[in-house]
Length: 330
Image (cartoon, rainbow, N blue to C red; front, side, top):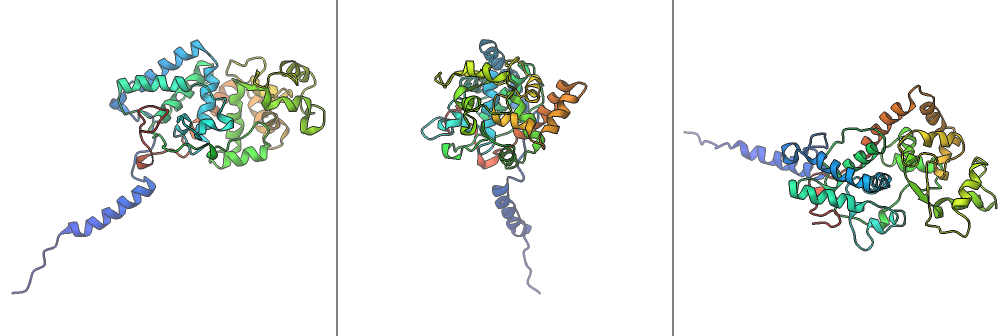
């Protein structure tokens, strides 16, 4: 009688699943990606809780709108949208020079506190920041858009990692920074137009209005009537921390006035005004201004670009966590 062999299919399948598990660890291929409605019944009212916090803080101080929008941008452009900019501590991203003027941290912590009561250890700080940015834009008169959720919070925050587009950057440099994040020139122009709300400190742009490139004169691309207006607000010996609205005329309202200002040589920052003088970006500005309903289309395109930006290098799986508080890792 011949010998029999006991065949166990698990011996074949086990190595296969080990390979899949190993690959999943490195690629997170099998893990869910951010999507709208991500939390479902686990935290069905996440958006209404964040919205309530945003509304109260907007009423208390409308400057929270550009503050949170800028914070979201700074977060996503450094190691992805993982709320690493919210982590406090020596040498964290918050201590980097471009981030010293960020404001609104208390708003995100307030929303996190309420969500920890309603849905403990469920909603990430990264998702809260993305939702808050959308809601603040909407309250300021801008578009509303569905925000994909499911990001995790990062565990690393280093000032040395902070490399952001700067206020004197050329279009070439800005394009490079955006391309590194898989954002195109259209995204660059549309997201820069987020400067339709907010302010900038005199220290950032004063030389442009007094001594551009050490010429002893203002930047020649500035409208002559705009020069004395800004010089009066930011005198040479004045306080460098004095803040000036980025969009003269409607600094608290999310609209297309910023784009009109570029066309009229009234862009406050050099990095903004070059979007009009550069032959590659100018047609994008002209197209947006030339539409029959410019604000409607601009709002749609801003929402699209914000959705793209909000998914830069997100953390999922073992790459991140759900923080208990937004300013510290677990």
